[in-house]
Amino acid sequence: MSHPATPEIFVNHRLNSDPDIVALTGYRHYAIFVPKVGGELPFVVYARKNSSGEDNLQRGPVGLPQTHLQISSWSEDPEEARRLGDLVRKVLDGRPGVVGDATIVDIRLVSEADDFVEPQGAGAQLPLAYEVRQLYQVRWQQ
Amino acid sequence: MAVSSQGLTFTFGGTTLSVTNVSVNETQDLIDATDLGVAQNSRRIYVGGFASDAEVTIEYFGDLLTSGTSGALVIAGPIAYTGTATISSSSVSASVGDLVRGSATFRVV
Image (cartoon, rainbow over all chains, first blue to last red):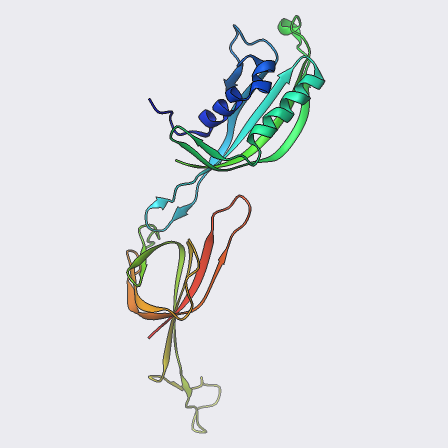
């Protein structure tokens, strides 16, 4: 069975295919949210921030929509979060390709930031977590 | 009544282009026929019916159109316009993260 044509499938496949990333995350690459069970650090979470497309006058959308994907690399160790973020950039930035029916014609890093979360209240028993948050511009064949 | 631009098709030389903007401009030469008999503070008098120009400009997704190429130009949909045209100028641009975009100007005979 072929994969659905989405940039998320492409990203997940790229992350799962890199042995250095998998060695850190153990395939914990999640779309949108982290499951309550099994979502131990470190992991990678990806989600769409927005999508837009180009139209022509004849029939509207011309294909090749542009999606901004936020990809966050999380770890209890800031150095490990940084290393994971660098590995993610290495397999995605400027590395278009085809996975199943998903054709990515352009993918590039447009911004990157470090952050952290210090759990409060009910989550106070959770560890301090560090994030390397990257935003990618993806143009893909719908 | 307002009419949506959507649904317009643009064809040149039998090829339909993926246009995003179409402008049709027609001009008519007028001769200033004002003479000394014109009343004080009245408007100048112009006489038309001389040479006219028709120009069509487009923006589109796609590669460069070759200047000097002639063919049948057909606009259909919310604007209806036809004629035999020659490309008088054209350009194409590509930039990071964007689609290839072209623009062209046609002189219609």
